[in-house]
Image (cartoon, rainbow, N blue to C red; front, side, top):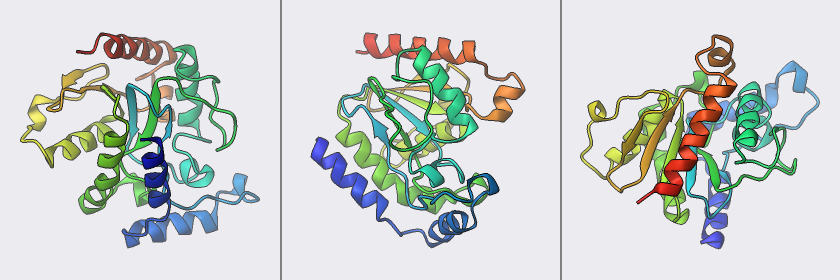
Length: 229
């Protein structure tokens, strides 16, 4: 399965299926943000990363323009990553409290982190066709990560993307899966879907999510994984 996942990740990195996304990720990589003007941006699709024998799959919607699209790793090199990895480290799901760049020594424990959409979309809003195209990769990720029993969706949009993904194969209804921070639902393939507020600066600064609340959720998720049947 490890070789299959590596092969998939190479395929993802080479993807040019969505012209709008290719154009936007390239534009961002060329124009850059002033504070990163001397850096070489990744500017390609982002693969997942982490423990390939993980029970937990953490899912964001898409890489950030000057985070993942710059560094080549999702939830890396931006304020959302700063908050998330302090929490993951405290919950003993990561070996360090930072995710700054691709080869910074970061290791995830029993956790694999990915994005439903592999490229940064304009305005952080992918089209339904772009998501459906990318779901072919997401499906293979879940297949190759055969020990996954719990999915933690980071933000409502990522939560809804997970539901739309499952709708392709199962007759599920959104009304049966109402997003909330800490909300838990049994999916048709028996995995547990858990909702979380997105670790964005907006949510942190307004107090919607804080360090204690996020760590408590991660500890609860660890219990769910352990007790899974």
